[in-house]
Amino acid sequence: MASETTTGRLLTKTPPHGGHAKANGHASAHAGGVAAAIRAHGGRYEDDIVREAQRFRVPASLVCAVIEVESSFRNVFGHDTVRNPIKSPPRGVRAVTEDSYRVYLRHRKLGEGSQGVGPIPIARRNGIGVTPRSVEQANHAHSLNTTSGNRSDHKGPPDVAWAADMSNGGSPTPQMDKLAADLARTFGISWPGSGLVNHTDGRHRYQLIYRTNLGGNHFNHVHLGVKKL
Image 1 (cartoon, rainbow, N blue to C red):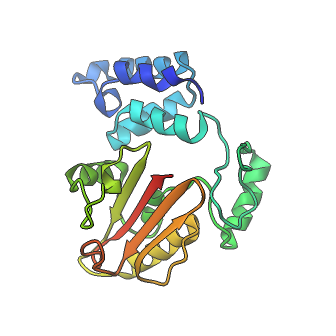
Image 2 (cartoon, rainbow, N blue to C red):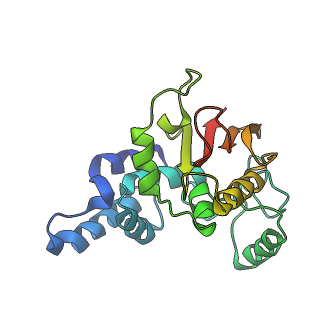
């Protein structure tokens, strides 16, 4: 990782929502200060981080924490267990280059899976309008425990567990059907088209729930949860 203090210091320095200044005249100066803090503590992509944190109204420190855990601020392929051969090796990383990304895209278009693509962009490309902010709000309002009495993935903490409920209707829609199938392909889940299915890859447990009343009504949304093993 970049360093434990990259995110830790930012958490103490960065106001909520990427540092939205109350007075518009101070907004750009404040954004520059946040970007400088990211650089000073070992981070990269500071301008992109500040811009996207403001656009989605999430703390810049949260964006830094996710990037630090996922890639240590490096532009690398993920470790998802899909057929696409362009990925980072076990216990190692593979840098993204223009040439390797072109090859990766060719394999992805053949249906061999994606790397480093989360459920929110997958939902959006299937016509379901969720955002990091809407997922954060829904998870905050979610009950602490599942119907079976276990702690819900929705309640995290995010470095241990995370979940999103994604929907565009009160009952199954073609978009939700395609989303469930797309998520299953991306995360290597054997998906029969409905039910509650768990899959582990040695590092994480993934859970896909849709078109079932198991765990509550899941006819009106697609649930994807992930938990660190």
